Image 1: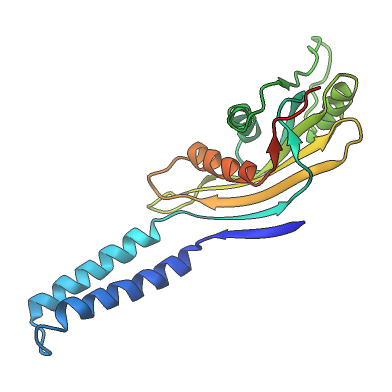
Image 2 (image 1 turned 60 degrees about the vertical axis):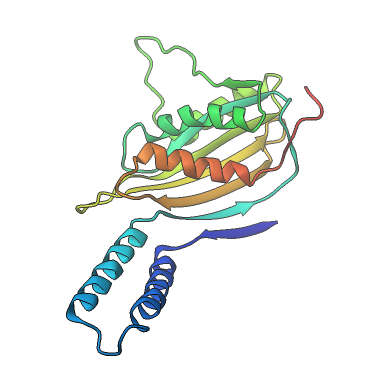
Length: 221
C-alpha cells in the first residue's frame, strides 16, 4: 500500500499564522477604540512581522511510503551500501553512519555492515554505486542474512542565501536478501531552519521514514 504524508508545508504555516495574528490583532485592539493610535498600529505590525518570520523559519518535510509486511527485529540484518546521487561528497557514508543507531532504536539488534574486500595495490577501486551494491548483495546472499537495508541520498546541502537552511532528500528500502524483493521503501525530503545542521535534518528525516515501517520482535534467525 502506498501513501503520502505531508508535514505542514511552509506556505500553509505562513497562511495560518497570518490568520491567527490577524485574529489576535482584532481581539486585542478592536475593543479599545476604532481609531487606533499610531503606537498601537506599529506594535501590531511588529508582532505580525515577527510571527510570520518565525513561522517561515519552521521546517517542512514530506514522505512517500511503500508499506509492506512486518519486519522481524530479531532476524539477521545487514547494512548495504548507500548510493550518493547528490553533489555532496561523502553524503552516502554519513547516512550509513546514521542508520545503525536508528535501527537499534527500532529494536534491530543483529546488524552487520558490509565491508568490501581489501583492494590490492594494482586493483582499480569500484566507483560505480550500482556495481558496489551488486557486489554487496552477492556477498550478503552467501551468508545468513534475512534483511538488507540500503537507499540513496538525493540532496544533502545548505541552501544559498543568508539563512542557509539545510535541505535533505533521502530514500530507504528494506530487501529480502534471499529473493532481492523490496519489502518496504520510503522517499522523503526535508528542509530545516537556519539553526539546524544538514546531518541533524537528515537524522530527523530518516527517523520519520523508519517510523513508517512495521517492526515486530517475535522470531529470530
